[in-house]
Length: 370
Image 1 (cartoon, helix red, strand yellow):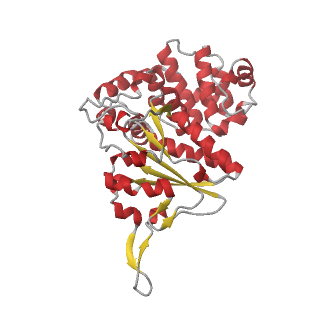
Image 2 (cartoon, one colour):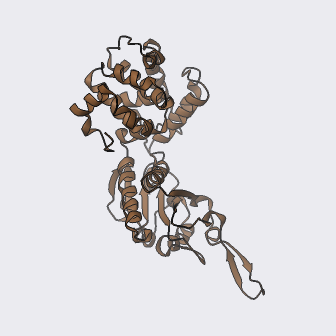
Image 3 (cartoon, one colour):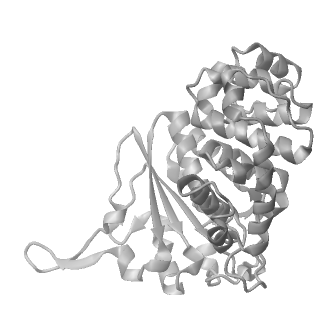
């Protein structure tokens, strides 16, 4: 970030979510004003997960405080400076001009609600629009209108060095923000993907091949390339249109590029030789595969099926089956099951899981459930 003349703290998306949600929750529990925490600017390559991370913060705040969290996503690239202030109109006696507040800034007030305002693509906005954002970040006002006290302000954008649409941020605006640079981290993304229900083929492929999660090169002219965002698009295609990777290959190439798509296609052929996951959840005990790639694929099948059937009695059968797998994959699956919130209490009542947790699972338990 040399164009701003400052050094950034580099964090993964998961670390960003943990640190910021923890800070906001601490303020809310202590009854301290949210405005006492500085507005945060999230920098990162296209598709790395900035917007997803903000929504994860909102969910974490809601889960830990019991408050309703409303996210207002303002894409500044689409705004003119006057759009942020509102439309001028005459007052009642037509002697003065007053400004109508933009609807996007009409936020719910009250103790039981938190508003999260995301000024997205701020670095892609023209300098005149960035200048109009000064007032929001510094004074928490929009023209003549004040943001409510229960509002958190965050901003996000691509770096100038990414060769995406981006303008160098004026230092006067930069100095009003706390800057964090988001870096790629496969483990952080995997935890999010489990909670989000990412399709098992994408989940397994990227767990076995984490180097394919992010292949962004600002010097490369290809329009399609793998990022956390484009892999989520692939997941939607496989989950919503067809699981036939060969049939969907042209669409997958259009999301992540030819090289990543063909790697996924070749790897996905493993699934045809795996045990039937429904039989595992029904109590059958087929022989586990031996090769690592097949075990990665089986792991993703079990975790995805557990996510889809969280209320199923078959979870207990699956946990017992997983106990037979090699230690590394047993750890992976049990750790992933912990990410599925509805399963945590059930897991603590299963002997095989409880035995694993007592022996080696405590290092994985980020929630103190058991």
